[in-house]
Length: 131
Image (cartoon, rainbow, N blue to C red; front, side, top):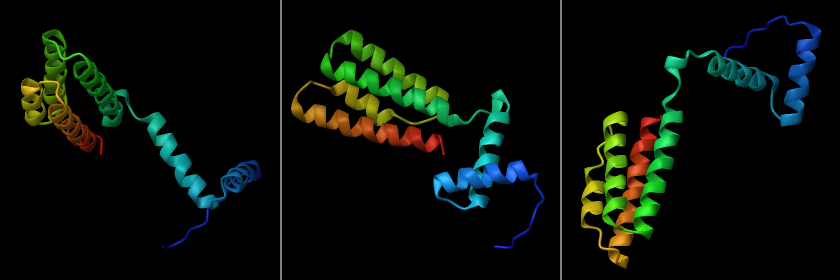
């Protein structure tokens, strides 16, 4: 890594040093973190990271799955399928395997295990969209 020096006012230097000491890290790492935070705050609204949307849909999927697993009636199946379809269309994630498991869900231990595993895989697919 090639190093450069910059001039900063004394009070700025002291603040960077204080933060670095409290975090137990190098001063340059504090500056890198500050720049990253600055960029995130200044980012235009239309360019917000996908991670916010991803977190919402993971939460929504988890809640729908839990409700359906606990009470697998037609109404909950319909809501769960609608949530899955929203995620597929809005995040462009293929969740056909999850839809298949939901359609065939019987509520026994084997289908509960299949649902849990498939929901976990679906969440991992959704998380990949946030990267």
